[in-house]
Every structure is written in C-alpha cells, then in structure tokens.
Image 1 (cartoon, rainbow, N blue to C red):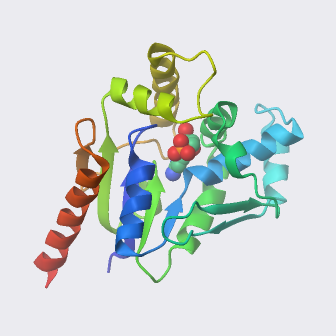
Image 2: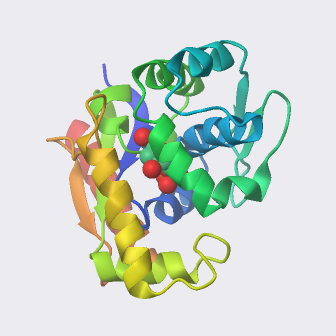
Length: 228
Ligand code: DC
C-alpha cells in the first residue's frame, strides 16, 4: 500500500512552499515543511557558534536536540520548535538558509530528520514538501509532484520576499545565490534534490498560484478515479 502523502519537491524559490501550503488548505489536511527542520538545525548551529567542519561537535549537538513540528491550521504558518524555542521568522534569514543547505549535506543530520518526517506523517493524508520527499522519505507516496520555475522567475520571487535576501540584492545576485544553493542541494551524496521518476512535473513560471493548485488537484483526482 502507498503512503498517505502528497510529496512536493523542487528547487529553491520554485513556488513549492506556497503551492504546498495552499494545496493543504484547499484539501484541509496538514502541511509539513521539511526545509524548516534543516533551517532550525542551522539556526541552532549558528546560535552555538559551532564550526560546520567539526562533525563530532555537530553530532553531539544533534543528540541533545529536540525538534517539535506542529502542522499548522489551514492558512497558518507552521510552528517549529527547537529545544522548546520558537525561532519564527529568524529561520527565513539568508544566512540561516545557507547554513540549512550545509547541514542538510550531512548524512547523520538527514538520518535524524528522516525519522522525524516519517513519524510526522503516519495515518492521515498530509502534504509534505522538501527536496527528497518523493525519492527518499516517502518513495511510495501516493501522489508526487516536482515543482520548478525558470531561474529568472525564481530570483524575482525570492527578491519579492522581504527579509530573505541581502539589502543590496539584485535579480542577478539573487539568481547567483539560488544557483549556488541548488548546486549544493542537487550534487550532495546523500538524498540529493532530484525529480522522482513517477513525480508529475509542474513548471510554475507562467502560472498563477491558483492555476498551480488546480493542476495539482486535477492530477490527484485523476489518480483517485483511476483507482476506483
Ligand atoms: O525549502 P527551504 O529553502 O526552506 O530548505 C532549506 C534548505 O534545507 C535547502 O537548501 C535544502 C535543505 N532541504 C533538504 O536538503 N531536504 C529537504 N527535504 C528540505 C530542505
């Protein structure tokens, strides 16, 4: 039997988080944003001033780390707590995004988050969004999507999100940051970003968010009726 998961993967600023959140709201099911878990770990590394090269210290830190992810009510933001603390918007900062991408390369970090993610989705249908949901976390997810957009559209979207880029950022500098993070995410040895063979590809460059959600719902309904 397949897992009760709508897996949504894709690169930085492809529109996948917005699509995942709104799809979950439309279907009235929980939304799980796995990037926030890597961001929370990156945030703790930064607070403690740990050296990213010191894997022994990172492992020790992780053994004493408790992440609690509460799926948000429809339309609300996810509530992620690390050791009881709610970092909130601090997780969206550019330096934390870059640290998240770095910690996400480390196999023992991924083993830790895999465990949380598999436990978070157990019985009820959920939307889970990240980089490796359809390939590694739930390779047997009932529905899988891979969301992309052109580099320019992605840079413009990221630039429009307050607090997520440097003050003097331009479309070109943001596009370069995005390309660097994509490269790091898709060339790492463990669970790299890639489209699952059975995922449906949606390029959101020329679509409104409502068109993206409609396209996903059409795929979900088609699959449901094929199974009946
Ligand atoms: O989706 P995001 O930008 O919040 O993710 C932050 C970083 O976390 C991203 O650069 C790669 C990493 N990540 C990952 O490796 N696997 C996931 N399932 C989700 C995020």
